[in-house]
Image 1 (cartoon, one colour):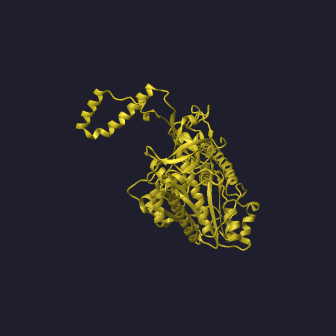
Image 2 (cartoon, helix red, strand yellow):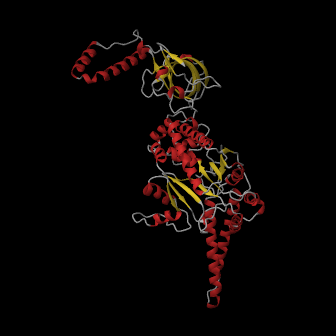
Length: 565
């Protein structure tokens, strides 16, 4: 406990490994830190702004009195307009300071008002410091880092903050050249900050995003620990043909198919048109049509290819029952300038579980994440709500309080097909993926809450998901969240070796070397098991209301700038 005056207040939080006071323990209190007035602390941070205030106004020896005729006019005016008195007092005070400064420019030192932040909170602490405290050549500009000792006191001008630090001793100054410092201006666009990923965490927005992201990661560990899961580390790079290597081969295969389309089209144009040649021409046109259909399928498969730890995670689930991992994955499809090539995933696998078990677990997990954000990240959510998306906090609360709607892929298709009052840009048929437009219509217009769409056609899903008894659909599910679209995908895995072998063969993935170990999980003690994966960046977009994935990951890797930082 710390003593302030005659009362005892909760102690400030001193970081164990530097003994400085963490700013959140001062500024995140219910009264903004007023209860700590009179407490001596050592604290520090990076300077966000600086204002200089001359102190001569309080010295009666330099005050410049008003002339008698001016005072008489003012008194007469105030008698008739008493509401102007507060404004006039402020103006008179400023005139006195200006006049005093002009009369005695060297009357005394300037008081510097520094606002600092150590990254522990979105709020800044004002430090009141005599500018003479700085050593020669160590002028404290915006961008500098300081460590200072002083006494907390109620703010003299409490607009925006309740408490300030009266500095008595400077322990460290990491100077910054205000002319060169890229973040010297008070406001920056997110686009500009992307060009400075090594400095952008110092901005309030990116700092809040980082703390929210950290809270999501911590809450993930808490949820799985609470429910008996074991955290395991998975390889980032692997040779299993579901990700990067498959993506490269599919890309090469697509180039070959497109080249074949051009060659076949050329031959058909050059073929003579005659009755005797009609059958040969028909066969060639049908062959060209099938080749074009193959090209469409290859392009479609590329859009969804990523390297995932999911298959390797299954091996640990088939020994430890319930496991999860959090780590980076790499996108293997055709690169796009604004699309991330590196993402982070939370992946989960549960042995002895079927599709509904995985859906229940995924729903509970998302609700836990959102409730944890409300409980622990209120200030940062309030900041992004104020500056980026005023509905973000309410959207998070709504996900916690409402049950998720559950519909099959077939039911989703029926709902979309019956829409008469609007026109979708794309028409969807059986066996095709719902577009983002369709998904958002289901969530935002029909059900107005999160929706789980399950039992997709097997053509849309990878070889390892369980094929249902109808032979057409799979035990899979997508969770579609308001604003963001698909947030989480999951499935029950195929535990039947004969069905798995057929799927691998049908998709042309029949390399024994790549899949023999995976088949062993079915050969030796097969078990029903299910799992899901959460896209961490999409979860961040949902929580913050931002719209660009590059703004919610610490170092965005895209095809155009992937190696720059």
